Image (cartoon, rainbow, N blue to C red; front, side, top):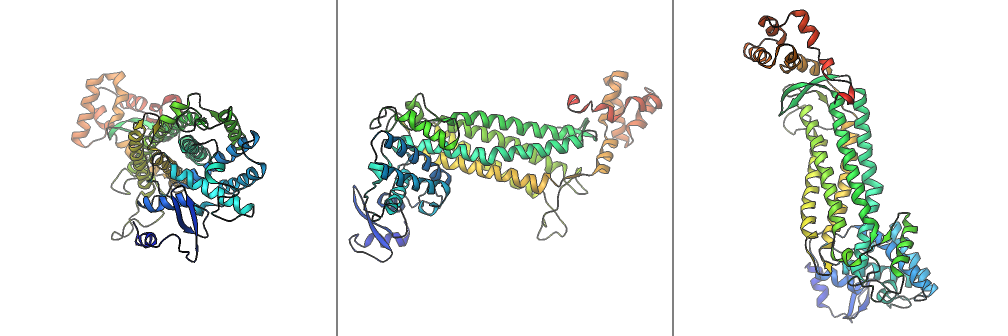
Length: 483
């Protein structure tokens, strides 16, 4: 616990201090900063869960605004909430969704596994803002109470996981899918322009038969497209929400029809096909939709690792490596070696992907710890998935703009590698057989001669036949069809 909070606990609550006000909950009174909307339960959480600096993602808190606004609208329609209270709550929720209240959500990720402290943080902030709008006194819980009004017909157990779904959908749709698509589009565009540039292929990091630069790059684009499809499929599972199940999935203390109506209300506000979960016991006892999304993010990370590593290998050098790609020179690469420039964008993307794979391992473990009627590992999964989405989107954007966009070919190096490769001998196999072709390649490797010289010297093919058969451009096929 921080020394400041320790000293704060030693001062009796009843003693007023400048810049603070008194809030209360079922356990008694607590001091809170006068310029913040949160209340007693948030203050207790700050005290009791002073663990690290990892704050609950603000995207989740904003998504909670849809949950609370939709609930207020449905509760008012059913006569459970006055129009005056409903209107004030709705306005506070709109401010929350827009980001105007971001400074009022200080809680850490490391809290109760149901997310109750964050739910109450949201309830308290909305209630106090609504009280302020109605001309009341902050902290009085009148005329709007955090539990009885803002949290009406809900539980942390159904509302937190619903906010998780909405936050993830927003992040995937607004940032991640567009950035993956933009990167795939650029790679595909580069591939189309280089589809006729023959180069040597490599398998096992050893020389192989030729393909084109475009064919090599189109594989990267396809990997990203497939990763997008997996994320989109996992995204569909987030459309079902638990809201309306309240504590254990039975809907206790929620009015008839609340679950369906609140889902329709959220669908209207978000313009997403949100629907109530058909089995709320499942929706609240597991985190399966998030586990599947996390796995799809891991799949994207695997694809990005392949691409980033390929780019690093192909750009290695500039003189003593493969050196077929020329990357943008964005910054000096060494504090001791002048003139050195490193593939920093690839390295950054690799670290992003590794972090996401680590997050997925934690998410899988957390998903497996759903006990009986509740998975109580929600905050860490919410934080991990939202962080993964954020850094993957940012990583793709940075890699696209600072690496791929400015990447050019060293055509001379590509032609040199192609000319020196012994694997062009593969084209002779249909004419002279595998064994004779192998002996030609072995002789060229041993003698340091060219494949052409050894092939002609072997007497197996004439100069004219060799030049007719061994044509790299003819060996790469016809664009994607050849691939």
